[in-house]
Each structure stands twice: as structure tokens, then as C-alpha cells.
Length: 383
Image (cartoon, rainbow, N blue to C red; front, top):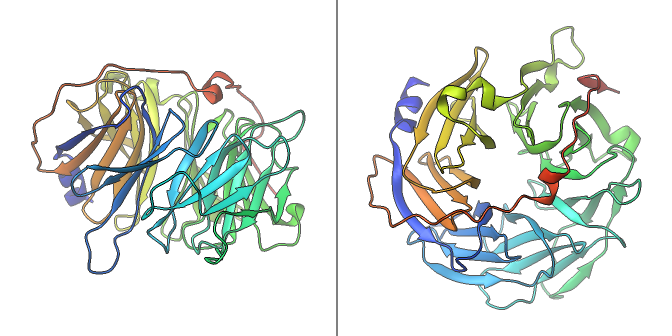
């Protein structure tokens, strides 16, 4: 662990790329897996102008843009098994998939929701069989919508109807959906109702599928799995809280809560953390890392273990304003970050590349952040 901390302490800015549309900012990042024997990884970024842009990871050069969504986008993800398949969800009630080898705005597959669905989160199961999207609350309903994602290559631009929905487990906007990294039947969801629900979708109905519910006492902004066996779940909240639970202890007398920090800004006030960006579990090191940022553009790396949360590294001189998104490469422990300065940055160990002039912030408060509500209920419940 000391070796990794030493490596991470030497993360420096290696490359900078200005986003093609310079009046937008980066709100999501994903990277494709390389095809065998080739160095052809692609970076997909989700932009605030309702587009998805594609870049070459090696050169940071712009490749093409997909702007077939008429409304606000949420999440951008590559297929786990097909590096050329890229998907994003939209508040118009669709999830669209593109072939990244082809230019144009026509999606190769469109997953359609039910009337009034506005998708604000989605994920794809680890075997690429199932797509799940979370909706905004409409009247009294907030849905998890599911589709069969197995693609029929002979039927391009096919409209795919849902397999069904879960409608009883959340009572407010479903802000995050996160499939288990190795079990395609396990999925977690987080909401502005404060709940983090864990489902086994192999069960026949929603009631049986709901394995556990944890409560963050706030509005969930980020969600992820952790632990050697991926039997832990953690979340960040819109009021900058951090919660970490051990699901393996649900049926034991041991505490389920591994960590609970209601305000990371107060906890790390000396490091100038204004907000939390996200988290990542480093399987090789069996360690959970969190990223926090400042409105001036610095990025803070934090390590979580049984002794609490520890500050590891602050990276300066990159972004000039709020950092919205990141992608961690486990192969070389490099980092991609995107922010409101319309720049995509690549951080690497030992690099000391020069940086062009920074871009001023174009901050726009998200509709989800404007709707934050705090809920005080029991910290968890199980069936």
C-alpha cells in the first residue's frame, strides 16, 4: 500500500485537451478497452451541450461527436465486451447506443421508456445483457426501467421496449444506478430520497429482488461497489457526505456501517475541499479511494480504510474551475479529469508536461443539485 501511495503522490499533468465546443463543460467520462494487440482506446465525454464527444486516448485528438439527443444527457458508458459500442441516457426517455467506428447522429439501438419517463441515470450489467435506467420522479412515481441489451446486428436503429420496471423501492429521483462488477444479477440504485437499494434482479418480482436498503440521510450523488468480493457499497451525497457499508455483515451482529462522514468539507477543511467528485475501488490494493475538488480546480485524492479517511495527494495547476468527472486507469494508475473549464486532462506518474492557459468556469447549477433534500431515517434496513 505504501508503494501505491508513493506512486500516486507523484501524479502530474501530462496532457491537456480543450473540448471541441468551448462553451460547454465535461460532466462524464468513460474509456473503451483496447482491442487485442492494438493501442486504440477511445475517450468518450458527456458534455453539457447535450452531446457525446469521442477522442483518441493516445493523442487526445478529437474524433467525432454524437448529438442525437434532444434533451439533457446523463452518464456515458462503453460496452464491457464490445469496445466500439457506446451508450448514453437522456431525459427524453431513451438510452441510445452508437457504433464508434461510424460518424453521424443515427443510433444503432434505442432503448425506449414508458410515457413521462425522464432518465437521469443508467448502467449496463457486467455481461452486457441488461440495461437499467433510473427516472426522475413524476407525480408519485420513480422507476428503475430494465431492457434486454443483447443487440441484433441485423436490425439497426431498432427500438427496444422495456422488460419491465421496479416502481416501489424509491419515492424520489433515482440519481444513480450501478451494476455489480462481477455479478450481472446484482444492481444498486441511489436516490434523492436518501436510500441506496440493492437488488437481485434474477428474482421474480421487485419485493423478492430487494435484498437490502441503506440510508445516507441525504441525496445520493455517487454510488460504487468495494471490497475484495465486491460485497461493500458506498455513496457520496449532494451535501458532500460519505457513507460506506459492509453488506456481508447484514445477517451478523457486527455493524454494517464502515464509515459515515456527514460533511467531507469540514472533515478536510485544511485541504480546501469544496465538493466530492466520486470514488473508485482499487482491487489490486484492496483500497477505496475518493476524489474531492476545489472550485479553483485542484483535485484531492483520499484513501479509505478501517482507520478512517486519509488525505494522500492534492494536484494543482490543471483545471481552473470545478471538476465534474474522472476516469481511473488501473493498469498504470493514471487519471483523466474533466471540468467546467471545458478541458479534459490526463494525469500520469512522473509527468511534468506544460499546460496551456486555463479556461474560465462556466458553472451551471444542475437541476438535481437544486432539488437536494435531507432525509433522516433509520440508517439501514434488510428484508
